[in-house]
Image (cartoon, rainbow, N blue to C red):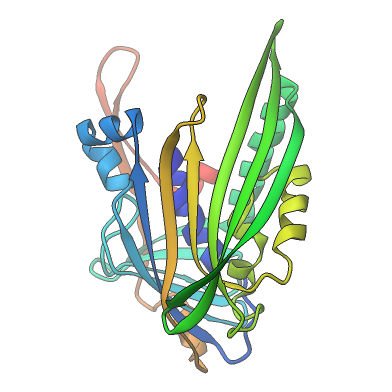
Length: 289
């Protein structure tokens, strides 16, 4: 579930408002490697294999509009499906084969996520301490998509302190990033991608330090995020890489919901209190209201 949310978050991140007068087209790919117990769980779980499978996409962005075409299958979409948003507030996930769509209110989704975080912090009396953010210049790293890049290592560490009933729980969080940036592209080419939201933890006192460290670093062409377990063992490596990018004036119609599409409903089966099978239909957007 956590990885599903991460993949979906990347898609949302790309589709939020961008302000580029000329427009931009870029292709990107993502991949995830798991290690240790997580890798063993992946081998035994077909759903987890699908969740962590490599993904490719092509993104069109201009002004506040965005369109993402998916070039591979995943749990959330099929190859050939696409997302469109005119304003970054309402997103349509479209299936061109059936001419149907799922509708999502991005502000509602953000609000629900923030509300869940605040509720958790309140219920568990969650606090954060020992925040440490450091960036190290690792030197020239060749080129990516034809642009010269420089490699940086960013280490983010902090303690999460919780109190559940009368029990105190303290966890040490560690995230490590390798960031490949170029000075040959303007920082505001795709603002919502290039700024620190790509590395956000959702914790203000941590993110403020990340923002300060990333300022002026360059346009990120590739990022690698390493995850660690309780014993500081490597558990995962997630990569996001731009494979091509160019500026081009785009037709605003690209960001509109196509004519003739109807909203899709999801049908699930369950059982009532007496054990009888029931089928229920709902819309994807209803999950985030």
